[in-house]
Length: 151
Image (cartoon, rainbow, N blue to C red; front, top):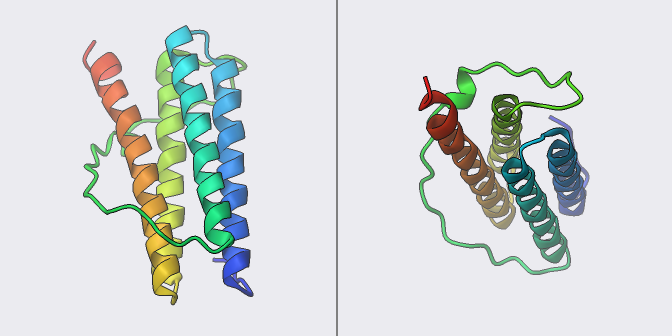
């Protein structure tokens, strides 16, 4: 994992990651034809924008984070394959891509929390990991209901 010089460097990295996630979901919304899925991905783009804004506030000195709650992991993302080469994605492909993306984000923030020696920063990253776990769960539930439920 990259070595940072300061907490601000770590926060800048996390902000950049959230901005990338915003663009990812905006792009994904353009690639799917299903209007409900387009709206879902646009909503996720807004949530990722909110994460970036929260990180900017933390960088500016605000350190309060929400309470922690166990987020279930259906592990669906562990067993599905993705194909993101297409210009447009079908419903299943878009959900798989989103689940995998959220799983990666969860791992990143979990690793950052575990690597942090700063108690407050550890909590910030653990909170962000929890947010990404919530996103992954929402996509897994959607996949379970609409893809696995049809089979």
